[in-house]
Image (cartoon, rainbow, N blue to C red; front, side):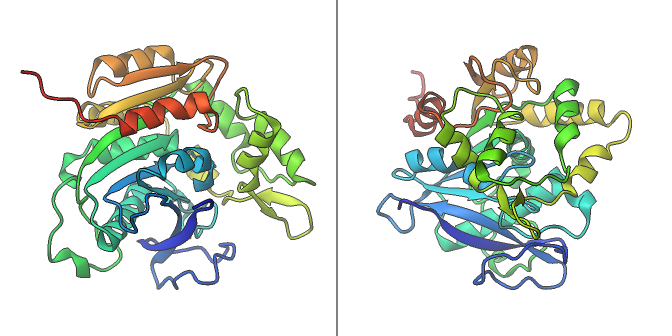
Length: 337
């Protein structure tokens, strides 16, 4: 499979009438529902591989960010890369304040329930960049979600909360932790949701280089940009996400950051999955001190750092892909004794 297959899952929460057109063969969303797109890679030769790797993107990104990593993993596992609501090919949400981790967790559970119905999942791994890592911590840090499937649950209506069929086995957190540096949040807030228009894909790629950092080739930047833009009504290109995601981002009340940090540390400390933490050494989101703390508590993450890289490692270069593939595909360690 040289290109992924586009699929959809129905999720709880009303779609916005402002949503861009989705794929013509996407299922119709009923009242109180929205459609979440996901890209599926599978070169295993097995139409129903039991190993699933879920790759979840950052705040203003989309599932095609993981193309290079997914190609490397798709010979070994079913790789699923969702466009979270409001991004890419997914519906936008009617309520801008719903663009938050609780909604993303509910959508992810709906996605995993659909994947489980299609083919039983025996091994589940998670790769989360930035926001995708926060969602992963929220799911992995609630062991109550990781319980066997209820045999009577297959007829549940959209809007129900499905349990995971299996717990997440291995978790990759890409440049994110329970504590998020304020400087990085301020930087993101300056560009998030701003109306921009580009004349060409190359111009959009140059703009992307100003928000990400890394030793990438020109074609890498173009690949990262191609799925992030769509044709603008008046010509040129515009960003392929709902600008209203900025409303929830900016609406946090005073003290929310400290409260959220405490909650995320509680979740992190309850994670049972083996954990790999990736960090750009120049990151303004994940500090060296936070990364060190994550290596010493909770799942005691293995830390890999990339010099000359900020927030967040893009996982498109071989040196960034290799540690993720090695971590996810390494055999289980034999118990001591």
